[in-house]
Image (cartoon, rainbow, N blue to C red; front, side, top):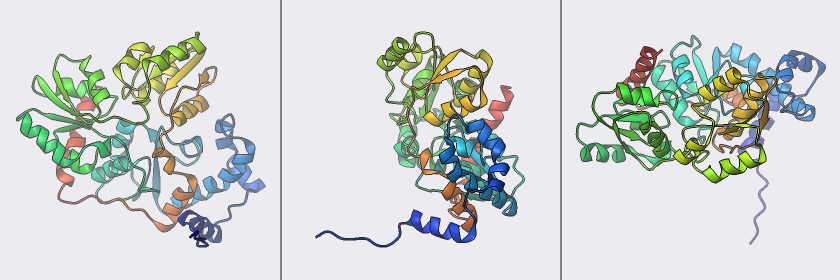
Length: 355
């Protein structure tokens, strides 16, 4: 039997409610108010789409002032979020550091859930919101507390370095966190000749090339980066023989060996802005390439990317809805906050020592 569903979906319901509270029609006034943003993204967003985004951007920027909110956005967010409403942008390390400095009472995390948890760990007295709590991470879901405890039992006394792409609960049973930008530094600074590095097997394998220490890995991987292959790089070389190819260290080692530069999202951005190649392929998440292109003139950005479905759960509508309703609030079990926070704070402190 075929059922007909007449009820509004949650998103339809949100749109209907937002329309009752905010003027989401494109007008000359909104066009003027957002023209500086559109100037940065016009090569990535057609004018016909901008007429839909601009009223939402205007409403969000007005509402965040009223709510005493700051918006943190990861480099993988879409250009309309990254350039339109974000107050602070960056990679996981940058956002973690900046989260310790914010003055506002409300943090809206435009990223995935573990990032929002990290902001909460560092700001337990503040309200932390994520526009869609379903924005997860294949790495964070690949390992549990029980998995970590089992590894520690197998290798007693071996320190555990955990990628920030993990739950707060996992962070709480490890020694120190790391990001792709500081993984090698953290491993080299931590005591001992052997390190357990979880959960990204490829980040661990690529880090192993930068240290004399033995690294014990876990079989997790980022679904955006794990599918890239050396054959893909060869095809890109053939298609774009004059282009520079750069990649993220969450890619398999054979990919990293085949590219011109590898580094964290922040490092890739810095490399492009410093080296200014005539043509570049960024082997990472697609929106990051779009965002860097909007900030960099004279560089031709070519496609060779994947889309993160989790990051794309965050959009302007649910950001506005989140601020409007003060949902979805991110909470962390108070019992694990001290240990999890310590692992993050150790990372930040060790990173600062390396400046």
